[in-house]
Length: 213
Image (cartoon, rainbow, N blue to C red; front, side):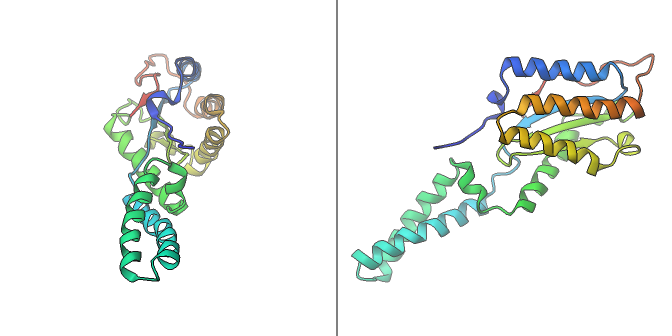
């Protein structure tokens, strides 16, 4: 079965309302500003697609050339090219197949790098007190990165934030993403409220709407 989650349709309208309400609820008690972004994937991973084609395509090519082609190297190479291209193309439409050929640390690195790029591209660093927090969801990798501006890092370390991110990632895997995300927005919000209480002249500097990019 082809499994392709798309950012534009990952959260239903009802889900998006719940997430926006969770952000609004948190921001009533903290100067922190929360944003949620979901994207299809953090990279195209062309090397993994090539490796999938070579690895998987070589098996039927070898079997067919051995049993029906008399072990001819030319038959094997022709079939290998055919199956290699075919399975490489297929892996681009079947995410779990491509993920097999990508090391976990590579997935984590690309999500982290993409989250950092998005943080600056979307202007999330422009809050008055440098208290922006991005919940970044990358669907292909099924990974979440919570990125905070330097004002937040003065009180909260990245390891703590990633504990909450891991729970959201588990929620995505268990098809319970919205509940997990709202729960961790509340949990992070409590930490923000303790360390960055709301100010009298506070304003909503970042949109509460889910960003699909």
